[in-house]
Image (cartoon, rainbow, N blue to C red; front, side, top):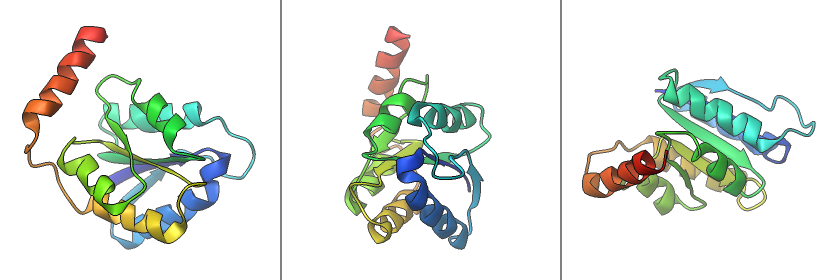
Length: 147
């Protein structure tokens, strides 16, 4: 699977650890920054990751900022994108199984590296099976009505 990843300066170290872990799981990773610890605004990176998924260049995405909230809000502003904030294994898994979320977001100031790795595994190791299709369809309808 091809995975887009991105972070602001608060999430840089966690992004680097997660990126390496995703590659060890056998996935291809496209890194949208930041590429160093200099101040980077999370909306810029989140928009790039989300657009890469909109365009079909990547299948899923991982976004990291201080709390995971800012990148989730930004990514969810893009038409057709469902980004889910998850700081535990179960929520990360359900982001995909229940909501068909294309992007998982996490907060580097909330969780550590090992928890983040487990969350990414939970998210990437499951596939949408349409179990909550009716609810996802309603999310899509709200989006269509509002955009």
